[in-house]
Length: 129
Image (cartoon, rainbow, N blue to C red; front, side, top):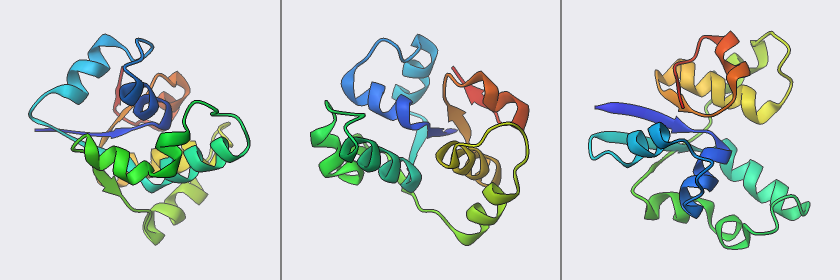
């Protein structure tokens, strides 16, 4: 079984059927033996960015992010104190708190991260793209 965590953009692109999501990522996420998680941090990021007008086409998703994830058969990944502590200690040039949390969760939960963000490689995560 493959276990993956979707980066926020990957989750939104999956829902929209957007071809910016790589063919490999679409195959992995859509495979019957893949277990897919969406992080609570993506719920926060989507609702925050929608509220600020940065995701104007995501009103339906922003209204019920968890419902959109569960409707796809994905699991929700809560943020734990361990995740937060680890994210807070991550070094490097990356400063985005949402990205740092996804990296921390990927590392702690041993999940491959579905993302096009090559800069995540410096954190040693397994990246699917």
